[in-house]
Amino acid sequence: MKQILKKHSVLICLVISMMFIVIASLFYPGGSLVDKNAIGFDWSKNFLSNLFAPKALNGSENPGRIWALIGMAFLAVGYGIFFINMSKKIASKQWAIILKCIGIANIILIFLIATPLHDLGVLSIILTLIGLFVITVFVLKSKLHVLKWCCVICLLTYYVFFTFYGFGYLGLAMIMQKVYNISSMLLVLGLEYFTKQEDFIPYTKN
Image 1 (cartoon, rainbow, N blue to C red):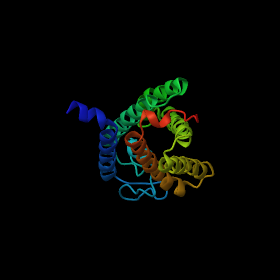
Image 2: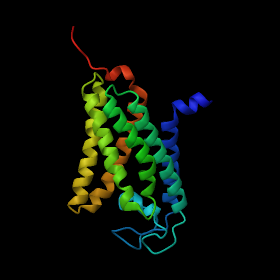
Image 3: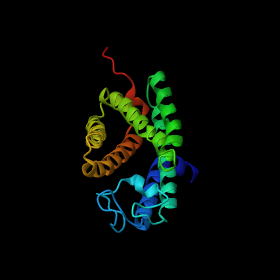
Image 4: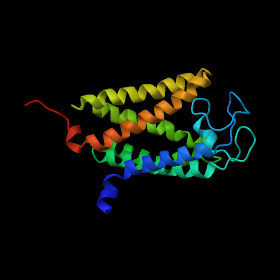
């Protein structure tokens, strides 16, 4: 049992995280940036951060907050374990150390998104993006052809989100937030299960 939990720890954390986030959305009273009087949580009109607020946007107490906090805690641990695991597969010691540091930092910073230190916690998104970019570079140098496309597509979803958010297209940004979260989780699971240390050993011709 211990070996199974260790082998599938990332998957377990992500699944549990999503379960609690969905539960939190079901308990969210209502209100969005589009309509303060809206009832419930709308996945296309609310940011996920709305679930972590003590009060919903309609002014009511948010009973779903505790579930969102638990979900975010599992997400933080899942991503942290993933980056630490990937650091053991990367041939470069320097980049392996960086990935391990990102993993440890994410365990702390991702959870801060769900606290009053939200702005500091947002750094976890940047660190995650950096970590995935580093991994993408190594994947592009490997023979993992399917994962190459997966890495590129995942990074593009992040950039599209930041573009929409930066230019004030909040409606599209809300949707892209879910898209990049789903794409990054799928990529993380793909990299976790379908890569090994041998995949990242530099190939040299004799």
